[in-house]
Amino acid sequence: MSSFWNHNISISIFGESHGPGIGVVIDNLPAGEYIDAEQLTEFMARRAPRNDATSTHRKESDIPSIMSGVLNNRTTGTPLMALIRNNDQHSADYGNVSRLARPGHADYTGALRYKGFNDVRGGGHFSGRLTAPIVFAGAVCGQILEHRGIYTGAHIAAIHNIKDKLFDPCNIDRETIIAVRHKKIPVLSDKKGEAMYNDIAKARESLDSVGGIVECAVINVPAGVGSPMFEGIENTVSQLVFGIPAVKGIEFGSGFRAPAMLGSQHNDEFYVDEQGHVKTKTNNSGGILGGISNGMPIIFRVAFKPTPSIARPQATVDYHDLKNETIEIKGRHDPCVVLRAVPVVEAAANIAILSHMLDYPNF
Image (cartoon, rainbow, N blue to C red; front, side):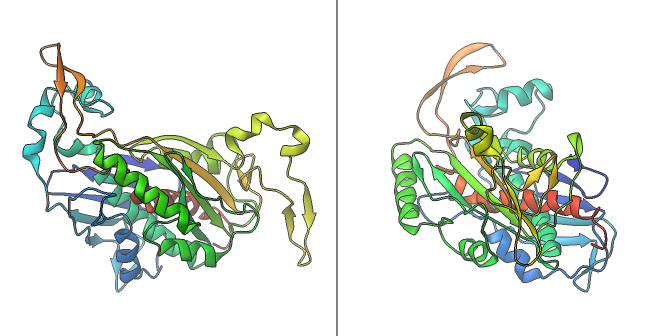
């Protein structure tokens, strides 16, 4: 299994894209937490393929069967295990991949790592299909956080060269987060969302693909959560985010814009508001200082590469016979993974924040 572990929450993902099923084991969840099954289903449905030009035509119900860890809608405190059955595989589409390395995929590196015995059908354990168990785990963690008033929300900040407006880094509210969740194209500007949709459809018609950026925010995390150096909030979020296939980069707050700023521009000046809360006038830190939350919204952005599975002929190698070849990728693939990745990024954030919040007094 592929596992994330810290001294609090741990998750282990198992299964392969074209195997009988996939799933997750979540350990160290607090006991007695109410889990709403309908909300879980709604969260997971946001990751599911869409019946339009923006996603794969593979249809999976993604209905999790909870095998342990929940009784009468309450967590028991023992490991929570969920199984998601696979039902709509076209394994014959991957007959040539057992010898030919798909550019941009882990076929070649996976064959080296596992001595040629890795399951290449649909990407096997490297597939984006494995984000479904991540979303389940994140949906559970998100409900536990929301019981304490902590909300996570994300939107598409960019597709290809089309950019949505960004969250207001100092003033993100629950209403904004909830509103974006229910949009077909999860953006702040619907006009930009329409342009993104058309750009994805154009890439698909051209037998190509596009990438983009997801911006995520977590609000109402109290100040003082996290640890310095290797146990910081950025570390935990980044480790989980890089478990999402196609992720190529992450930045917090001002991120890669910071080097072009002066210290006087980048420093977030403190003040005490009318309610006696310590806040900052700006939020270039992304709500984190020294790995520890400062009480401002935690904000980060995640870069996704264009989907590597494109139907155009591409140069490759037969990695068994070490010959140059050409490959035409078959199968059903997303021309852009970013739309379906939005809830996956939220899920990763939920897991990371809950793992730190369990250290917080009186959580």
